[in-house]
Image 1 (tube, helix red, strand yellow):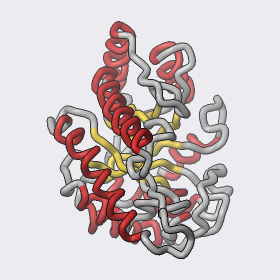
Image 2 (image 1 turned 180 degrees about the vertical axis):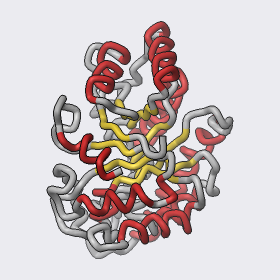
Image 3 (image 1 turned 90 degrees about the vertical axis):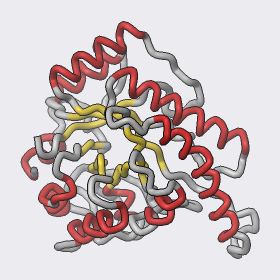
Image 4 (image 1 turned 135 degrees about the vertical axis):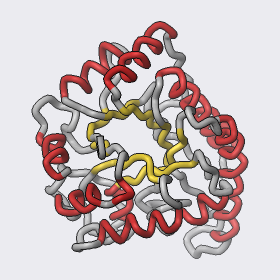
Length: 291
């Protein structure tokens, strides 16, 4: 399928009876899950029999599944404990992805703290130090998933709030460079995030130009997942608030452009909009019609 669509679903009673059952009921062709508490540090272990059953089921149905790491992960944090736990969580989620047959693990690109305060002094040094942390934490993990069949690590640029290490497409150049443009470092493009960071998705041709730039910087095949979200706020607002598709400042036309671009061929679109995991919600049907 050229661009499978779906949404983030809850685990509920488990991988098969919860996540997979919900995805099937909704008519998802792809879906995303958390494999633990999205707001906690615990490394939640799987159940081998359930993992195997889930992996077999999605292989048979050709469902495309992705894991999102918990929100606490910040590989640019100057706090040693936060950084160390972040690396451990990413590693754990990559292991879980392999165990359940998931295609990739999404991780937010993170932020740094400017110790010099609001005047900006020291920000350049802090940013560089944070990128070194990203390199030291992620390169060894990327090397462990170098095999073609291993799950991808998918970098998701943020909306630009705080001291973002990577907000918007242009920031990917330095971030990927810190990782030596590793062949298993993929990209998860969140439409709300990139719009909030300034991408002109609300203009005719703006979505096309954004993807053209992404391919220019990252290369062909680096884009592996799209988080399909509209934006409650105007372009460049650096706010991450998701309304329904077509109900925000991005608008539905941008998604038609994204679907039509060669870079999204074979790339799943996953909804993270309000109500998108409710039966009968219109966003999934709308994405399929725009496709």
